[in-house]
Structures are given as C-alpha cells and as structure tokens.
Image (cartoon, rainbow over all chains, first blue to last red; front, side, top):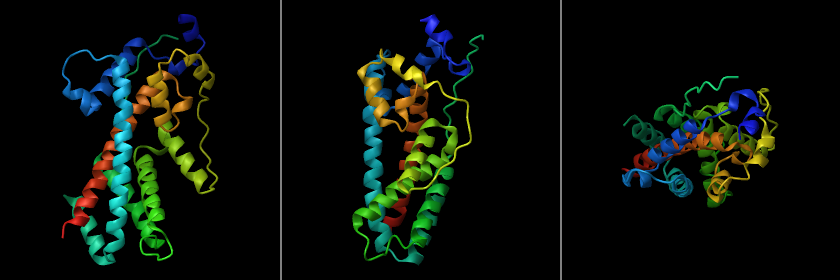
Length: 90
Length: 153
C-alpha cells in the first residue's frame, strides 16, 4: 500500500483519515442519511445513498426545467422580468 | 514529502451567485428568442434551459477550479462545437485510475454520475462529489424560487 502511495505525484496524497472524513461529510449532506441518526453508517451505504441523491437532484433539475420552459413561454416579457426579479429578491 | 494533511475545502458560493449566473444564461436565451420562437419544439426549449442550468451552475461554482465543472463545461462546449482552451494545470496522474480496481461497485456508479468522475482517484472522487452535491442543491433551490416567483400571480 505504502509503495503505491510513494509513486503518486506529490500533492494528491490523501490519508485514510481524510477519506473517512469525506465519507462523513457526504453522510451529512444527504438528507436520507442525516435522518438515520443511528451512528455508524457503512461507506458502502453512504455511496449508494449518494448515488440515489444525485439522481434525484438530476430529476429535479429536469422537472424544474420543464416547468420553467412552460412558464417562460407563456408569460410576456414585462411581467416575466418583474416576476423573476421579485422572486429572487425574496 | 511529509503528508501534511491540508484541510479539504468543499465550500460553495452563496445562492445569489448561482442565481445571477442562471439569470444571465436565461436572459441570453431570451435574447436569442429561444422562448417564443414558433419553429422550436417544446423539447428543444426544455433542453436549452436544462443546459443553461448546468452550465451556469458550473460557472457559478468556480468554472475551471473543479474537476467536475471543467468536465461539464468541456462537454457543453463540445456540443456547441466550440474550441475550449484550458490553462495548463499540473498533470494529473490518471494511470492511477487502473489501480482503483479495488473500488466497490458503488464507487463505479458514482463515477458514472459525476461529470469527469471516470478519471478521478477515489479520494478525489469523494471530494468532488461533496462539492457537486452542494452546488446541485443550490441550483435546484434557485430554479425552484424562479418557478415559484413566476407561478405566483
């Protein structure tokens, strides 16, 4: 293991601690896993839930793009601009 | 070289940075008359908006500073047949990819979901994923706000 490490180009050497730190970070980012406050979650579970979370987010972007397309096509210029600005100032 | 662990940063910009970039993309689309053109199908309109969402998200999140955003922008530019020139960075040792054979199936799935994931070392993959997830949620929030704002009459 350590011999493989020494062949890596300098800067990208990451320790096991940092890896488990990242797994923990991911765990906190995913709503599904935040709810299961049952302490230890396996790295494999974190990865699986990460994958489905990303897929869900992609689906949401798809869905919202659909709705935006409808909304932007049906509103006329003036009211659309005003509505956009209004919505983002909230 | 001593493996001094530098802290891994996965912070993302504020929501308004994402909002600003997305608005700019949308207004560009509007200027190209992408929303009212009669000979454009609904599908194309949706595709353009979706692309604008991902591209503006990649730009807001740091453009060429992240592997996933570089991959995303590169892919988008290729679709537009644009020539993209990235400033030369330290060469990534991509042969490591083959030595990642001990990767579980889950990491493979993750690689397929993350832009540019295929060429990343496993630890880098995790870091990039965390950043990507944060940015995606920001982008979704921005789009939701927009939809809510446009729907309320």
